[in-house]
Amino acid sequence: MASTESAESQESSEDDTKRKFREALERKKSKSASGSAHTDIGAKQPRAHGPLESRREFRRKSG
Image (cartoon, rainbow, N blue to C red; front, side, top):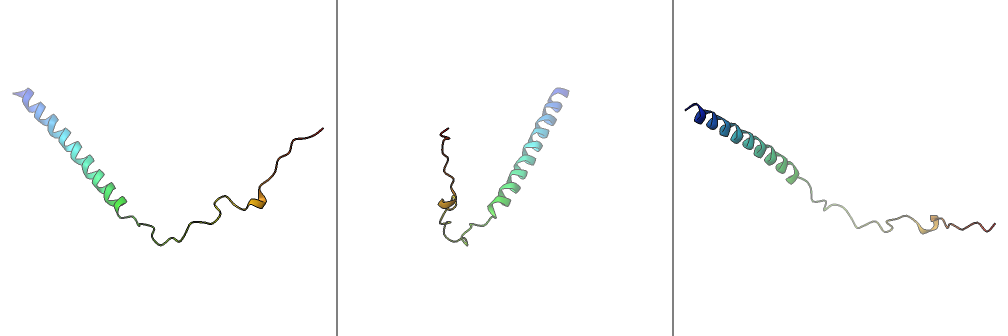
């Protein structure tokens, strides 16, 4: 009988651990679900990589 009691207590501790992890996951999901949809942002930036005038032209030395 002692072996069945220890097996039951081990299963209950595993169930308790799984329950705690599920609760933590639910809290994490509820935090991320409350984020905004970013609908207040306007159009994309017209030039994503900066002005073309500032790009440097590299030339090989001739001598």
